[in-house]
Length: 155
Length: 155
DNA sequence: AGTGAAAAACAATGGCG
DNA sequence: CGCCATTGTTTTTCACT
Image (cartoon, rainbow over all chains, first blue to last red; front, side, top):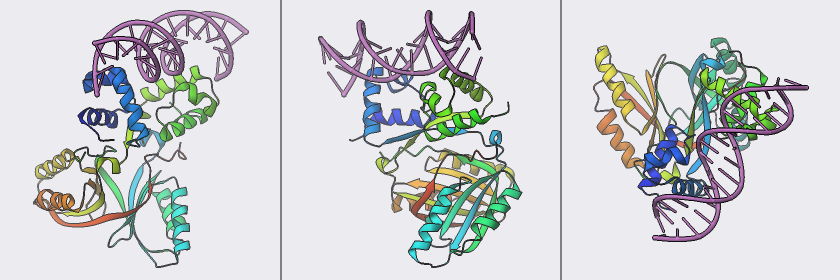
């Protein structure tokens, strides 16, 4: 399952516009629609092409605040840590949660309606957990760049 | 352009699986395919449904390292700051760049092949810029959660 | 590996209840 | 808003190079 230049072009186009069909892809990639179709099936089967997702406007959904929360954790037993992670996964305002090297131990990306709901989320759900030692919250002032497109230069 | 419960269901389904057509959406939403089709056009026209994008497997693209970089900036003239932001937008290993309240001033999310390419990116491109005062890099050890799905509870 | 044409599936539109 | 039929387009498949 090595990816060649044609696959690269297909993937690049799909990261930009995921609802491009084989017919529209053909002139971009320089391949017939039928071959694109065949390669798309293969890329899906190989797990390279994982999913197609809609990107929605936060403003239209009354999401006015984006924020990062840097957490340091208390050392608890693995079971409690897992329970905390499960809780995080169940909260839909938490878009991202990553465990990190060094300090902080964990970073969270949040999307909420306003400062009041951000405060509620922090106070009543995050800081309330005994697993959390400290939390530093930074609100997003300006979005310089935000893409879901992975770099393709390493293929 | 108020969004009702049907729109919410359409958007929720599309955030999960963006290539679902009206025919497949119909039973999920509880609406006929023709109505779904009309609502989709409206949602696109209103800018609620912004784009459809493919999500690719980082592993398949030889992306072995994810990292966050927290930057504090030197106070420079606006022109230099803008040039720095343009440079960031042009780097495809930088997935995200947000200006924050407090300290750090800026956070970056990176995707690179390995530690060597991460080091190269930091040393030769980020730290080389005079706009950067300090940089703290944290490598992602474990992905607990990562979604592009915005919360729909505020609509 | 790739092309091109036929076959099948699907989305979009309009009319009517 | 559901239902239905129609139309146009697109994907998919197959025979062939």
